[in-house]
Length: 134
Figure 1 (cartoon, rainbow, N blue to C red):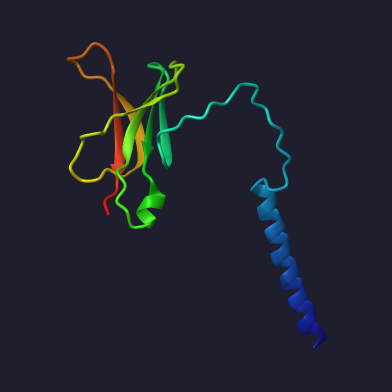
Figure 2 (cartoon, rainbow, N blue to C red):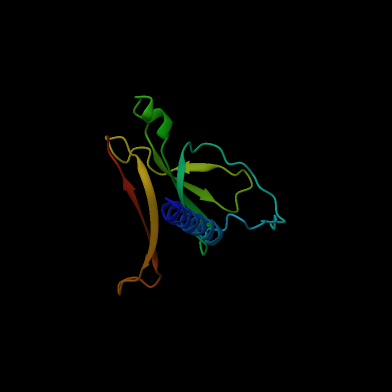
């Protein structure tokens, strides 16, 4: 009986040590100090913003958003891809997908790549978004 208890205690200690090490590696015991000296501004208009892609050279950002709470409540929300001008003092969003499709747009993520073709002198930015139906 004693050997059995020692074996169980050893296994429990091993699992506890593994769990503590996992938490340590995940950074759970680190102390975080705020290090942002700037100001934050709330940008309204995009409910459920999920992904933001910044085009640094152009000074703009693309925001994909869908109101997922409305979808869970049974309503059919219409998501959108928004354009945000990083230099705009009004901090407004512009909907780029107002009449994009008769189906409701529900973007989940967005990515941006640059393309350069022989027929163009300047590179073009290509923005793609994944949209889920239903």
